[in-house]
Amino acid sequence: MRAVIAGGSGLLGQLVAAALLERGDEVTILTRRKAWRGLGRAVIWNPAEPDGWLPELEGADLFFDFASGRIPRFHEPAERAGLIAERVAATTAICAAMPRLSKPPRLWFYGSSADIYAHNLGLPDGETLGLFGGGEPGSSPSWDLGVDVPYVAERMVNEVQLEGVRRIALRTAFVMQPAQGGYYALLRRIGCELYRGDFGDGSAQVSWISARDFERAVLFLADHAEASGPFNLVSPGSLASADFFGVMRSLDGVKPGYTLKPWMLELAARWKRYDTGLVLKSRKVAAERLGELGFTFRDREWSLVAAALRDASAARG
Image (cartoon, rainbow, N blue to C red; front, side):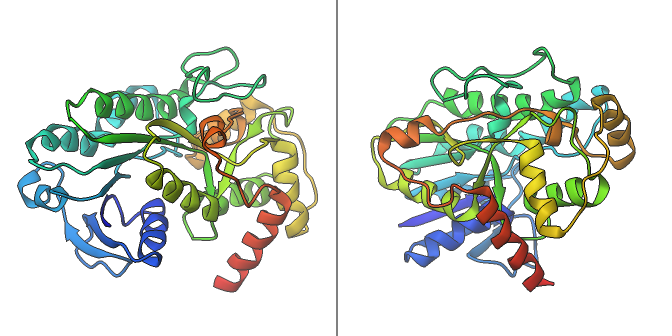
């Protein structure tokens, strides 16, 4: 198969590129980086100038849009509208250009996020009945960006008039991999270095997926012609943040510290410039539709995954 990955120089794009190349597919990366040394054949792209990259999509089997992603840093309310437009600008350009193709890709994956769901301590959010977030009780206004960006991107892609193009939204939880700049490194820094106590009452649910299962799920969906629409990519069984960070602290030999109240974290977030939703928002998400199709997860125990990630990180130096 021939695959094209917009934003393919990012962590998720490179995970997918590795999986596709391993099975013998041809992979083209659309990237802004002029000195590209990663996986896949690189094509320099400017989303605002489609004539330079749109021919790459003509007749492709698979197209991945990973050009917009999570916003883990703290931003003031006045900045949010501009940030949403900035994050979905590439997807906007893709949606405008796609109808110009005489033979568009047969399958269009677009990167969404499990952050689209509301702060939730109750029943898990599946794709069918999951409640979208935004201003719900117990949430912080700073978390709404994580809801708005994937919501806007999903709506735009679904509104494009294209015949015969299967579309899949990847509502992905924290993808755990040892790479620098990934969510494992970020959460480990927050939970083991910056702060060593529980966040709030420690009950916020953490949803995650291993890099291996993320790759497997994407290939699984690509190979199942009946799969379309949104899919939650999240390992079964979220766990409370006290337990999630407790595993990492135990592996690192970090002694528990004082409990941090939400207002303390909101103040600290402005200083450290990260979104408190990373540790205070409860993401209780279920891979309902993947299960219905028969997908099985290999990495289900956070303690085992965290130990492997710690070893891999140590080996990388």
